[in-house]
Structure formats: structure tokens, C-alpha cells
Length: 185
Image (tube, rainbow, N blue to C red):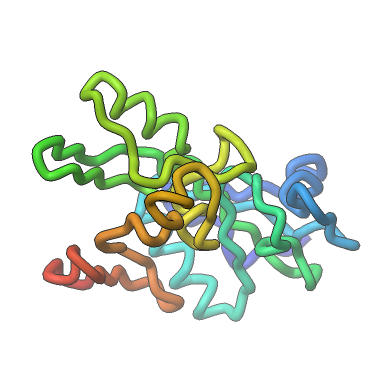
């Protein structure tokens, strides 16, 4: 078997294990007719950047996935060569500024992790998670503008966001909103 275009990227675990591919080919609502080609799990933002840059240069299709709790078919494969990017290893709560009521988290942080971190400070997130459960990730909820716990009073997941740092389709980092003053890398 020839090497996959995304093989050998530092900090990225690339799996072709059939059970993992099958699991990552479905959400709560739907299952793909054909399993995804592989599952990539970056261990750092820099590894994610390298993965996305390599995928762009080789024409490899990627779909991001958080906790797998979606019911919108957002990462259910519609093509057999799709590689799912499992973002759950990017799970650091980078900073909590209790005085300004701001938390900076990576996309793989679950709503349960964030809640546990804020509870001793007698704080909670303005939006505190979708109906799909405790394993749902902050990045996944924001990417789909989740609505449920807290929405009626405080708005959707995206309404609680002050800024985002994203990895573009070419692999560069771009900051927006309150983070917009940060330099792109």
C-alpha cells in the first residue's frame, strides 16, 4: 500500500483502523454510506496547521470533528477519501480571567471541562452546552452555533464568543474579534 499524503506529520496521529474510521463516519443522526479514509488527531495547534497545509497542497479533503455529538451531518463523509480531523486532543483551557469574565479555550475542550474549571470561581459560561451532552466540545458547539442550555436568556454558543483564532484552509493562523490584534502565523 502506498503512503497516504498525510503520513508522517510531526504531532499528528493518522489512523486507518477500521473501527475508528467507522466511528468517525457518523454523528448522532446519520451514518456515511462509506467510512472515512482516515482519522487524523493533531496534538497541537502547530501540528494542526501542518496537517491543514499538507492537505491543501495535496488536495486531501478534511472535515473537523469535536466530541462527535452533532446531529447535523457536519462531518459525515460524502466522499470516500475524506479525512476526519479529530480535535479532541486540543483540549487546553489556556486562560481564565475571572475579573473580566473571559475564558480562552482550545476547540477540543468539552462543556463539562469548562464548567468544572469555572465552578470553583463561582462562574459559569454564558452558554453552557448543547442538548447533545457533556462530551460535546466548545469548538463544535461554536462552529454550529449551538442552541440549548442558556440560549433563552443569554443567546447561542456563538453569541458568547468575543474572538476566535482559526486555522485557515492553507494552514495559517488567523485571529478575529477581540483576538484580532494578534499576528497571523
